Amino acid sequence: MSKKIKAVSPSKVLAEVVVKGMQEVKGHEIRLLDLTKIKGAVCDYFVVCHGDSNTQVEAIARSIEKQTGKELKEKPWHIEGKENAEWVLLDYVDVVAHIFYREAREFYNIEGLWADAPTEKIEYQV
Image 1 (cartoon, rainbow, N blue to C red):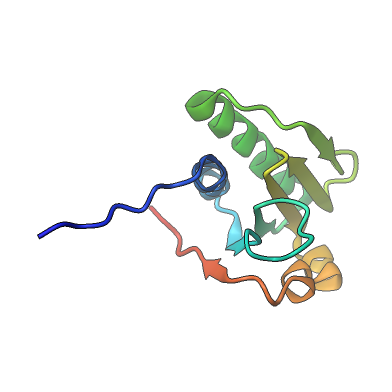
Image 2: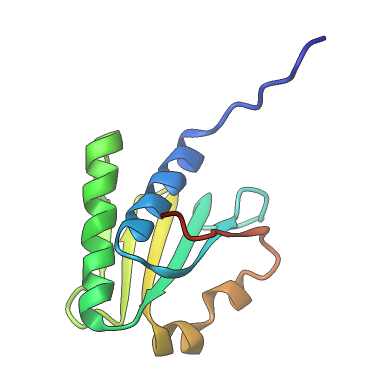
């Protein structure tokens, strides 16, 4: 009896490490959007969460950077939004992490804009 083993892409591994970074600082409502089959998508995965304060948003961003650096020796290619910490974007080219302040997440509605992408709701891990 043979089992097929599905290979995990490097971008999926990176997305999972980003999720771990979000979980470390209790990012809320983490969603993993798979854009790999979306024509014209800017990357393979969006990982989205929010924090309850600007301080938590900053802490989540730092945690993601720390986790990806430690586990994968990866650094973001580009970072935006750290100045006001309402929406911090960490761009790893194939994976983009979006960390929102709650109200900004509702306003920009990233999940709604990419509603045709399969979305995985990440349950909180202790």
